[in-house]
Image (cartoon, rainbow over all chains, first blue to last red; front, side, top):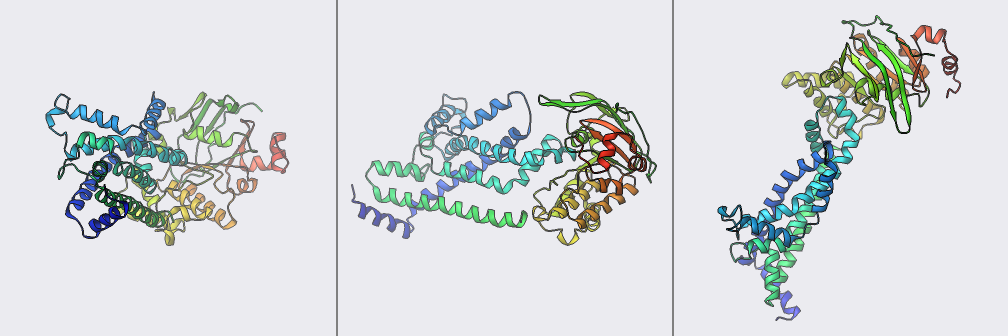
Length: 235
Length: 253
């Protein structure tokens, strides 16, 4: 067990020396999370918009389920994905367990309901404004979904960011399906958990600092871009 | 006055007269009460039909029922014997009191409507430029539509509605709360559309605007049609006490 001063010293040394092991972990974390969020956006945006615009029997139940799924316990998601991907599971033949792909699936399952639910709220607000005008122009339900998604694109960036924040900071699901295998499935959160339990606070702190900085930078970058795009499109 | 079944057939249209739009036993109500009808009404020919009446007369609800934005709770709206559907909707357009502009540039708002009507490529570009010029918005083409003034937004909404050359244009108090210059510009666009044969059905409670633009008048009170007459007759010799009071500027409940 190191003392805190020593741990911070080691953490900054790892960061400023550009430690290769550290970079590998950070790179994999980013790759897994960005792919998972991209897939979640591809599913969640149209799903949320459809729930906002389309009227069908059971719509209210879908909305309630979508909102409830925002609070999915990560470990349970991990367990569910594990069962699906294990040799005895329906997708066992794909041999994806303990691979980055399994982690992407777990993060995607966690994040898709968040993005879908936030999208539904955003699109529903805009649909209230556009509804009569679009119907008057003869735009059908699918055309309305496409129009609303496009016109709300800057607001939807916030939904994507919420998903990114949840995914990059997630540990329970990815450790269950990824297993924290060095050079294969070790990401920042799983490494922090394991290194802390081993008393290796320097590496854990270095990863923690990078994780926080990364979350702040991604949010800052996204917000800056959003402001610039919005001022160009909305004034 | 009893519900009227009239077809005045104003002969101002330059192209073939539009098919008659008829409300048959039309009514609309909610748990809070009946807002319109039951009423019988047929609007045909070209020109400008102004729906006049005090606040709460059901004018805007009637307009939405005729355009198919609201489903009637009784009766039906038919266009030359056909119920309203997407195809008939594409031959109509509507401008709302509070203009709804898409969160895109001014030009993109026009492009959006034109694309729905099948315009592409050079023809689309030409049409956009043409309508920007007609609406006096050419210098604002690349500006976000949301930052326009109220008058500019409404000019854009009118241009977007007219660019598809609709056979019928519904207008729900399109110049309410606008300055004089904007009203003149919008009425100019509407007159030009009327002269090209678009039937205009305009809701207003602005008696002066009705005098300027109406070819015939539908006067409503309490969700019912109280009087229907050519504009000169309506303003010269109103047949009902309510219409007389409204024209004189007295409060009609």
